[in-house]
Image (tube, rainbow over all chains, first blue to last red):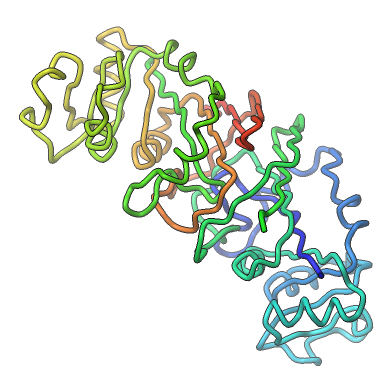
Length: 178
Length: 178
């Protein structure tokens, strides 16, 4: 079965971005040269799934930062929204999370990096997340885009590991109970 | 100066209680006999401040669990709301957080345990919290009473310590930057 994996940073009060999607509160604390394990995480993934908002954010970066095949889940984007040089590595999907994971599995994609607050929420609700590495940034920003949202049940987590960094970041690795 | 100190448990998604104030998700994970340091924390405090909701919850416990002098911040309760046996150790206050801390200071109360989500939020906004020990419970409950709320600025935190427990709880001790 194809499993979803989360590697994400959040303010202590649970936000992944400000209301206008800005990440200044995160980026200014992420410039210490600390190795938070992102490269090692990515090396264990076969693909990446993100939403439209994340895609549009990442498009503003130059160069395109991913070597993994990327799926953008969006009902509003079409093929023309994808810049020509990315058309081999980025695909659009209007499937449900369940159907998308099934399709990815058929293409040999076993471990999928699920990125972005809303996508993490919908994949958690669908029971498609196997593990989460959450890095808590030592700041309260008060409002913004939340990492977690409503669930239809309690979702139990198993603690795998914790790491603390000189920057004050605390990284917690959970397995999501089946 | 009198300082506020927080020692509180929250689900990973940031809730201190369910919408109806139930703590079942917490209590069922807190029965492992682990020492989370609560007694040591309490031993360093001179007083306790809570809101009406917490007070009414604690009144349902028998016996009354606190030896510290308790201040209940409430605009709706009056002296008759306090059971006779508690009238020496529980006082009501309609002051602002700033004024209350000033009054407590005049009575020699230097370190005050601030309990309950709404109170933590208002004391944080007023710059009255010096440190927070947050214990993350390994569960997502999806909705409830939040630990943190809106702020009028970013509130920087300094990591002091982390502890992990066999139960999967992760305790993080922060100093609140001045």
